[in-house]
Length: 242
Image (cartoon, rainbow, N blue to C red; front, side, top):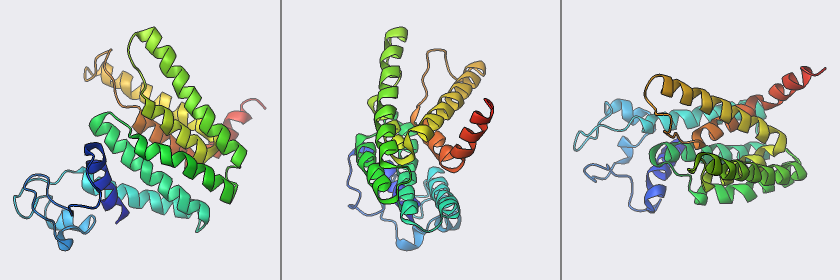
């Protein structure tokens, strides 16, 4: 159900449309979608992936986001249990899902999603002390400063914009929720995975050497991986020096 609402956010936020009105409707024929055709995952299968009225295909993203959200929620509850921290993490993951697909579709990361997420992460740290408030504040500041400095130097070196302001606030939000150490791990994972995919696309001739791919989805992926396995990654890395 939450994933269904996230689909609404993914479609409407970049278009500056209301999230409440009008109700769910087909983007092709604008026909209203009844509740029986709006059951997450089930309706997509029942309708064979097509609008009941105009038979236009329903985008694959809709069931993907619904299933992905359900999977992330289940993993978080199994990982963190039923706790206040879990509630904040579910909000955090929801924002990451919306940001990922908006950035893939439009190449932007709306500040309306990331800027409120920064104080939300700091409030979570005050209430749960996971991470500590000091680590959360440091993570938010270091995350923003890190991406900003990289963006400035990359623009000077390559004579073109490499990262936008959305990347800055996104990593700052990640730092607020995860703390500075896990934020650095998630950023490193994002850089490596993004570089590997870019090189693969260039080698396959799909992407030119000057081509660009959105970085937001890699930051979101790095945050998710780090949320569930970041401490083990840090322990493994530190064991290399013992």
